[in-house]
Length: 355
Image 1 (cartoon, rainbow, N blue to C red):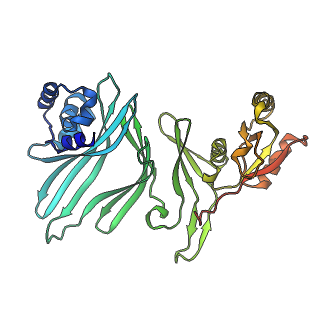
Image 2 (cartoon, rainbow, N blue to C red):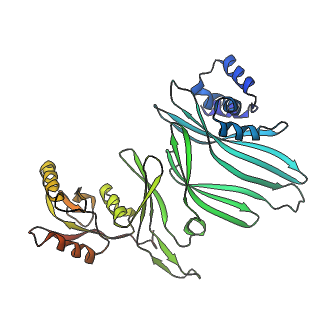
């Protein structure tokens, strides 16, 4: 597979739609195999078969006399669909500068259906001084922070112009239509650049759904001699159209649902309204539904074994946890002084200065 892709990328980039279609027909290649065996045909096929915006962008890069190259970027393959992306670059020389314009062409493949073309991003112009040249270099640098080899990837993108840089964090996601990209944090936290302050960013997956979590936040003094952990966390979830950000108790509760307390920047204090052994889940869920009718704060059933501060072997009914005991005790008043209702810490947040 790697040898096939390497040979295909070494082939000349074909921009002419008629020629690309003819070569595809002559080679008797199934359309869904083109991104693997003949990606050099994709620019020409896109100009003929993609929508107007994609075709127009590719058409601009495929200007007459341009030196073109095609390099692989993201790749994700499953039985139901595959997604690929390629960097299409046009190079030219102006004086003592090598100038490059590029865009990331993305392709979605569903077996038995036609290819879906898109553009993940148009890259900023790149400038490379040649020899003894006083031109200012400009280029893009990328680092995968998490998710390498998965359908959701966190990437630190840094654009350089001389000694000046601009960095941000983007999230890329594979879909049957190809790869998409969205800016998550701009500018990127200093922690990701020079080890300074700010949060870590991690992916967590359960039941086929990937979440992004900003956690272990910290503040570093300007002289770098002291560190102070910051509370709080942010959880991003895909809502079908965009990445939705949750903060505060909402984020704390979703992490508690997954038992992902290590990614929480706050302590987790639970108001436990009922509990039972794990074998009696159905009875406890029915009881929870009766309790829910009398209160607006959403309730959940969670396993005590998911939290280091609790004894394993039980199921508990509780609202989303609070970051402090005082807040949880204050909320207890809304439930009255009922027997068996109590407050307990499920976990203590890990220190962002030591993680």
